[in-house]
Length: 229
Image (cartoon, rainbow, N blue to C red; front, side):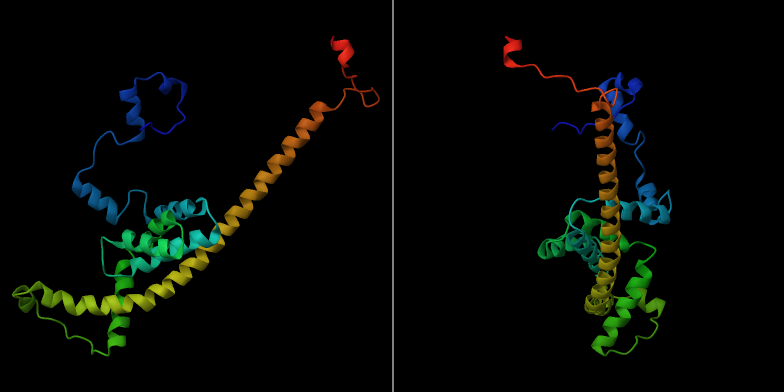
């Protein structure tokens, strides 16, 4: 498969192909611990990461409605307790709703190590309230370590998280839809305005070049068929 065309500097264009490939990937592969650190705290910071993600959403091709549906699907999937399957769940919902699949994958970044504690706390409390179960007592650390079955500890949390994810995910998805659609509409309107201005400037420059040098001078006569022969 041919690599996508990339713009290279004149100096880089003369490099061998094997050296040129290092321009677009890391020269030193990150250690798994470094990758884990990058996941929880990106080197550029979470603020810049969010800004980059939103700009990627704005620049996607498609209608604002489809892109916003994709982001909403990603936001909904981030509320589910099925960590590791959020992108798959988001794409499934986006496909059913005919949303943008790429936007749904980007929308899952709404759930991240900074927001997961707050999201899951709200989801769990909502699910527990919907189930009508009382608040669990603080477990003894010794009893927790000596538990015979891990499912006995996980199941009481998975069920409320799954139930609570539905209303919380719908609310978060609706908010994400409104924010994403307004941003995409504003970006596309600004882009159309810039493209229209470029067309007008290009048309004006072509008109100036085609105008005669003296306003009163007649235009150059055309060549008839008899003159051409």
